[in-house]
Image (cartoon, rainbow, N blue to C red; front, side, top):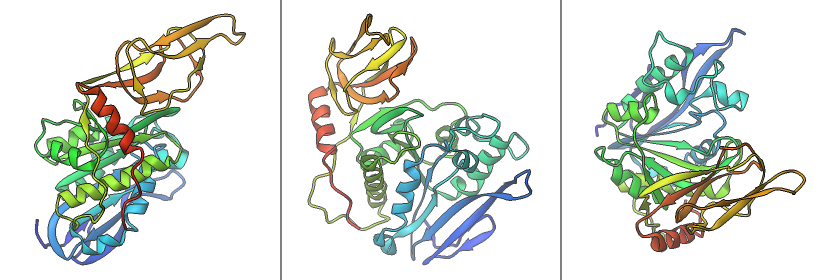
Length: 338
């Protein structure tokens, strides 16, 4: 927490100023340049330096809109410390509207990367050096993968120093205590000693207003908990997050057409009929039954399924009634004050 200028890609951002920086990544084979767009807001007073990133998977665009709205918040004029906003990390995938890099690698398995490695390794290495190493805390914004919707939730390694405080201050109703995956941004950031949480909400290539509003509200809440922003004047009580005791994906028992009216956030009871998989003629139908009680935190939106496809993601809680009630409360939360 100091008042020194923040230097990114050789550009100096002094306290009390803002800057848009293009971090060079590579050149296209058409001779054009590829760069990471970064917006830095450096407060006049010292404080934490928070990076907020999105589109590590290029088709996960809710986070891009969350960051766009975040940067328009007038309360940032009162900010302490620095905000480093990177709305599009996987520029290649974002342009192509795909999850992956041009070589079909998953950028979120390329960290920490290398300056002499694959395209993904070089991009990952650049992001770590120019953004993460300048920060004291991080929030990475994601959505469900293609044709899957996620209830707003957090993935975090709660045993890592400072992570649980970040996760609880975000205000999403569900926290998944998730192990660090090799090659992921979350693992690489944790190795550097920077507390990080991952926000998951909505579906790829779709704007989900609930997911966007909740994400914006969550980032602002984290910034307040870090004393980067003044306390909120809202009279509505914050959402109480619940840590899932575990979670399970319920898979298709047969191939066919999935028929289900369930929406994310629904309470699930063990033995409940979640839907059915039918053949196109309707002559054969197999019921999909919940093996456990919990809250539906993710589901497929594609009705055409193969045997073994993941259909419903159910989080399990020790206090299911209270957790389910909190999810219902969360879904009625209003817009954040600006």
